[in-house]
Length: 440
Image (tube, rainbow, N blue to C red; front, side):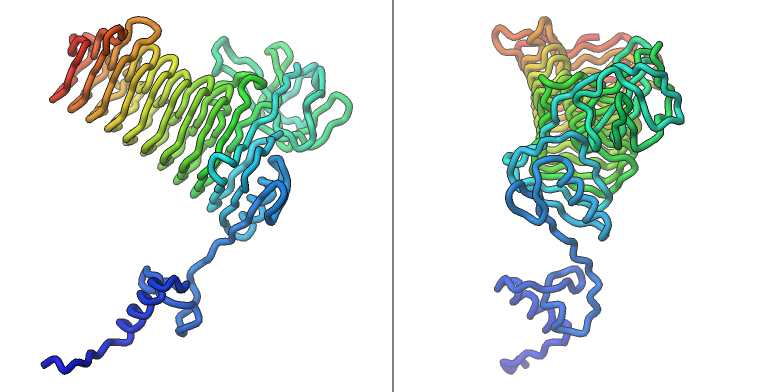
């Protein structure tokens, strides 16, 4: 019989106390995964790490400065103590070198008021052959190079914009017309192959670094004052062999190359990010990257919105807008398989909304991709447009519950074009307005 009194176990009392403290806003510790009470209120061991938050600002903060050095100093400090959050206060920070991220670092800006802006670039010819084991290069003009500044060495290996041997490094010292580097050249940079040195670098970069968060800031590439660089070598963001990164509320704009480029990286996520008016690819999930996720993102005014490179699999593009790009909204090709494009708006791209690229064989084609609940509208602003162009020996593509719309005067005269070599292309419950339905 209930007598008006209730007996609680010790654990229940701890949990109830924690709930009361939580309601009252009193800080607590975690018990069984839940916030409860002050860390000294029981004899529990203090086993939960509390990361440090360090602030960088231009006139206030723990560290003060206006360029890449103060940001890098904050990152290195936190890295030494096992990780933490570097909060960058509002201001325009002028970069003469890339920001190199470290494991377990959160780089957090203050929203659109925090801008990391690349300085103008210079380029100089090498005037002395440099072999692959050297720490210095001799250049025609040292103007614009500074100790601590970023440098890129390039030597041509063919006619394509991607056919270079490249070294990304930092200038450590200058002696006359010689620039000394922080690392070996690793390749032969010879005059006969048009070897150059330039102050080209990514804004954010890393190699072999996992577990990083970047949020609430703007990356400005200062495009008009920088030389073009292919996205296989740099970008506003350029990372290689990195896993488990989150970009949230980050804008990459006006970079004379790619906006976001990540090569051989797994589990890279983008939430509410923007890639705007970059010279090349808006988002570039690079070769071998697995499970990239793009949610609520915008890619606009680039050459291509999202470019799936080689062997990008199990990706998700959801609630994104790919608009007004100079070629394609989305491009899928060489062994890019098992990806999902869902609830996206793909419109006003100059040539094609979604392109499945032609490859040399069925093995190298982009198979088993799905497009669902999307709006594909008015693509082809630079001529006759196509909503979805499925080329080559592409197989097992499903398009369902998607609207293909070409308004009056629009150029998206074909909703879908399918190669004669393509197989098992399925269309289900789609709507076509003002443009032709699938043909093969």
